[in-house]
Length: 386
Image (cartoon, rainbow, N blue to C red; front, side, top):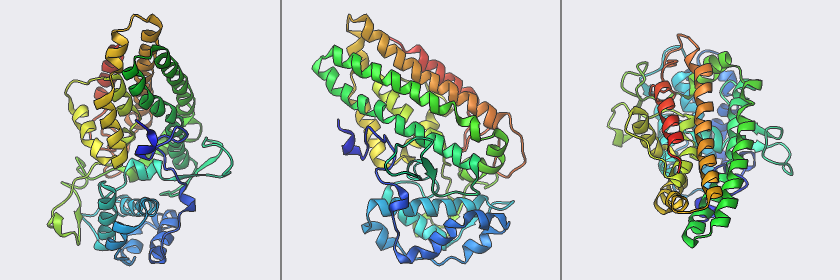
């Protein structure tokens, strides 16, 4: 397996291979880009739908089929933010998404093989750029490109995820190499790769631990989280959202899952590599469903890794105690990551309280209860040592 086959790299992992500030959309998008650039201002007026209703429909169905991937992904970032702002930017969500937003949103999503609302890829993976182009992808040198309200808390929440995704490139590259190394029976190389992965996890925790520095739990819950919910299992939308002008939807409400860190492909790739299994529960079913919300190449990487990895049996059958220790250390790192996720879910969501429509502190932005099952998945992960 080669990361480049999946549009990935050791340096950036799942992050976009380009930087969004270098992509210019055609002039037909001028009004859309202007609205997206001024989204904070439009939201602050309290009548964001008034402004977005006035946007022209650029009729991009043909463009979306033939345009470069970089342009389509950039358009997805802008449009998905506008769609979320339209739905959640006023006190009561609407029952319908107007055709001037629905048609381009669906055309772009169809080209990318994703759902027509904000995905993790548009919120995080494609929504960043380096301030100093000669510098690294780290928290001292990256910025968020498209915002809702903006501000340090919203930016920092996304950028911590960007930094983690970049650091995870080592995990993913070594995972791909381990497929070949195990096939060749090379214990020493396997040990080296696992040791490198353990060190990469430590750097990931360094980034993760910085979340509270500039993202306050109260501000996150009340000013960041409300805009990233989807339409599935959300009583505020009573069955979903009607996409006007989309014939194949037949005028029926569509219940798509919201943007969530669970759409990140880091942990699923590690589960695939280490052949970690989870027993059936609502969160497992939810995570299985979220697989379809990932970018198509990332889905293929996880699927290919799950099919080709023989790491668990290779290490289990080895008499090399050091190799088994390295395997179990990486397995524990993945469980530790789930624990940190659980801690943040408690402080940033579950302990908060508010009456914002659709922003239930007991339900994740993807639309499922999470606390109980996050603990279960963490414990299952930790238990599967060799």
